[in-house]
Every structure is written in structure tokens, then in C-alpha cells.
Image (cartoon, rainbow, N blue to C red; front, side):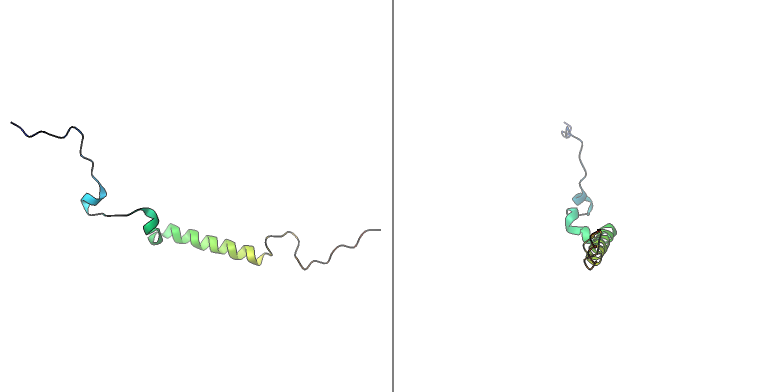
Length: 68
């Protein structure tokens, strides 16, 4: 008799080939896209703080004189 074969095709998983990779959030700090996003976020935060909270008129502006 021949040995029975699996009815479902065998799925190759990453751990079977020596690539034991965890979830992306655990290894994200190795990705260049992660660091570009961090730099852009820090630049946006610095711009927000330097721009007087993105206000249209500066805080030090002299109030307008009422028109007679």
C-alpha cells in the first residue's frame, strides 16, 4: 500500500525556512520608513511650537485702534 497523502497542499511558513520574523511593530525600528516618519513628525512638532501655535496673528501684536 502507498502511504496516504495530505488532502490539503502544504503551506510553507516563514519559520520553516529559517526566517523567524516577529510582527512588524516589534521590528519597525529597523525600517527606514519608520525613521523618516519620526523625523517628519518631530519637524512638524518643532514648526508648530516655533510658529506660535500656528496662530494667524502673533501674540505680541498691538490691538487695532477702533475706527471713529
